[in-house]
Image (cartoon, rainbow, N blue to C red; front, side, top):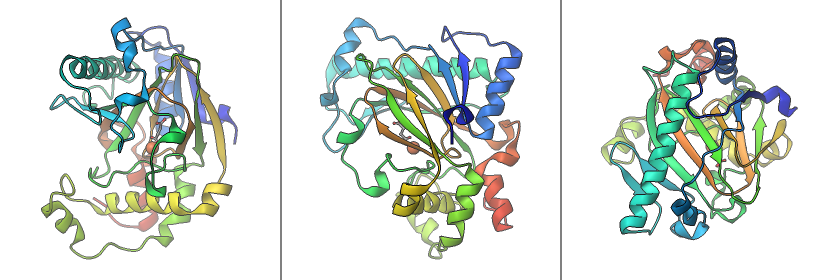
Length: 295
Ligand code: SIN
Ligand code: FE
């Protein structure tokens, strides 16, 4: 696989940029078809007082990332306190605000549906993050979260590399979702009857897992745990340099991060009805493959 086949480059000068219609439509089509949209040259500039956050030491030992929840304004994963903590929360909030505007400008048809979820800051060098195979994002995977049932809604993520020293973020992008799913779907075992209800009752999931969520988690885990797949599956290498921003549907696009530090990331949730081509969404693909409704 070649990087050109999995990336759509959109030269971008400003977070407020209004995109020409043709460029915007091409970018949205690329996203929905499972490519990475690279906003080349779009830099998230830190205030001078924010530069002190460019240190892996601000992350709690057991965590990979610092996260900000815009609904509660809670910051997690750091031991910073007081004014410093507020300052860091404000930086993540600002990243959330500019990426929201960016996506609204790029995809006006998404705008009324776009739900801003968590923002994360990933200061720790990828190689030095504590992980188990299941949590190891160096392995190709599609995103699915054990505590957060999506019921078919999409996960759209916007990343910026803000490393001050030129360190690229090294990504890999794998084969198209239908090909990946066709390999692993036959291997998934059905969940125990009543388990989704049980997890919800114990407060271990936010709402009840649908069959879709069970399958997506299964694909995430089985894909990551398959050593042969990880060694041999097709992939393209992307080198994402500081001063660039990229967007991708991470529930659809197989991805892995091999190296890098200091990235910001904003997650958006998007319902299927917002999509131009809902038939390409993982829910639609999996419903066709299984022959049944999954939500
Ligand atoms: C991931 O979503 O798997 C990690 C991507 C990154 O941190 O660059
Ligand atoms: Fe991921």
